Length: 147
Image 1 (spheres, rainbow, N blue to C red):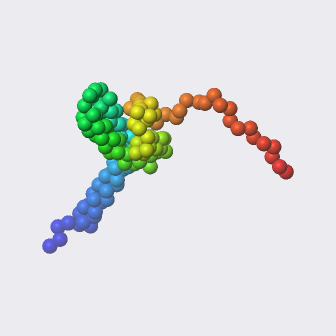
Image 2 (cartoon, helix red, strand yellow; image 1 turned 90 degrees about the vertical axis):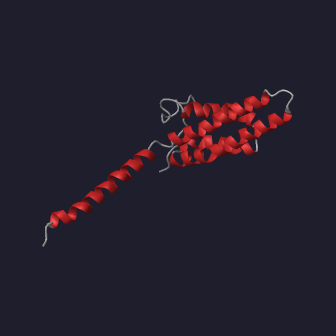
Image 3 (cartoon, one colour; image 1 turned 30 degrees about the vertical axis):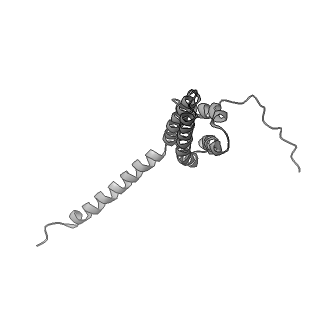
């Protein structure tokens, strides 16, 4: 005895299709922030690294503690790198953040503080996706066209 009609059999497939479409849309929406969330996560590690670096510089006469804090700071920067790389892959705006962090294995962190601070200030701003302010440098001159 058949109790479900044609519509009854199609309903579960229809509901499954709708769930897939809605779930996919929600996933894409989460990725649609242009890497801001990932950049902010990276900046959380950067903030921790800068704090540890500052503590290391204040240890005074305990070089072992200073070395330990500096190593922890370095590890925090290295944890920020994959997050910044993922952010940069979503939006080239975060390329500079990724590049600056990647220099941490060659350049002392103290030399990177200004750049990291500015880049994280942008990531943590209310409108991180806004284009940079206009430049005072004029655009290149356009040469004559050949005919």
